[in-house]
Length: 76
Image 1 (cartoon, rainbow, N blue to C red):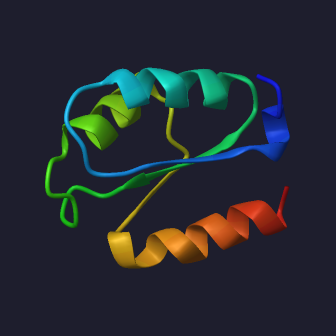
Image 2: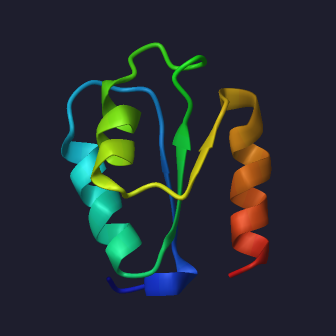
């Protein structure tokens, strides 16, 4: 909530949902949010949980995360 629309969150392969809850709070405060896609994830549960919550704006493969991050920062 501190940075709001100036923040960018990235959630990558992982187990559980704790990161998804944090991503949801970021998105709700106006942050741009990115998740790793299923095909390039080793464990899909964390990105999937964030997507299911509606916390993610962009879903990209691992190879595209850096570009998506730079793009999100450039438009902040």
